[in-house]
Length: 498
Image (cartoon, rainbow, N blue to C red; front, side, top):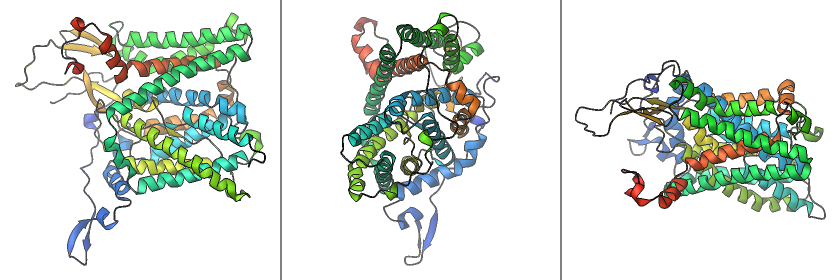
């Protein structure tokens, strides 16, 4: 089926159909002097490294186009969307870790997010997958802290965590070198949907948890103001979604609301916290530290190799294995969801090589004393979705259809006009790199001070909004609604009827 350019030139600078496409890469070949025949180079390397080598050789021809293809309007809203959806939840997830351990701060979280974005945007085989600080790693690090505090003579916390990250990094590298990602062939889409369904409920639960803490740690006025701010974020963001998927306004306006609804909601509601009676109640805001300085005035280098008691080095091994298992599943599932079949991707992925890079990032996190980044759900598929370009496909003459054509803007359908469909994804590295650079900018004095004005209630509402969005688009939710729907009112042609 042929396609034409997106009829929205003001929103899309150039269609992905005009992007630079490198030829399909071929395996490098060398001459075998013993057999005098040509063999693929990866066979000469043996079974180890085969997956990493294939990932690199498959993606390398597209590296230049990964940068040139970024000359597209879709990169701007994608950067804004993923910046707000990545940084603010990462800080919120880390509040427990920040306030309990005293070993991490907002600076460490932002440094971890920016380093992960820089590493994966510059060197990853699939730069669309977002890597950052997640809820599981904050819970994991807090569990380590609580466990060590129960010991009579515990080691220094960051030194022990450094060894945990070191063991986990070794397992990451071994898994990638021995092509462990091949086991993904046994991971079905149902497993990914189930995990995404679980993560969506985690976001909803964490929003409730942040709200209930305000009732315990703040005055009644501040707590109720935080609850109202949380609900305002959800209501405003959802109203933007409804307007974007309706027949209201011009199609350009609807797309603008779809692209920037979340950032606008966060900024506007944060401003409301300092207006009228909200300002009098003094709702709790985010804690901040000093620009580019770790908590407690320690050095950025954590010499965990100087741990004196050898027993703690080996005690860290099972913790490293647990972290490896967590990252192996979380990272691969987030990568699969971000590269789902509903997205018309054209460039090859790289599961083995990218997991090797994740091991490097984990090792760096141990040296710097920052939380280890991991694959993000639902941020990774949100990033891909924000880069989708819609166009009008042309039907061949031999294609017959009795269904009337429709015009779409978001999910709004207008009968009698051609229907827009996803025709491509702007596959590039700039949006991921840009949101990491914005995290560094946020660490500067003026912006860090500005970050301290964001109420915690706004973050709770952000969690609820992202959880609701993830639930609505999840296949498990669709199956549940299908089972509850009246059989006589089932939509004809629904795939679940097959």
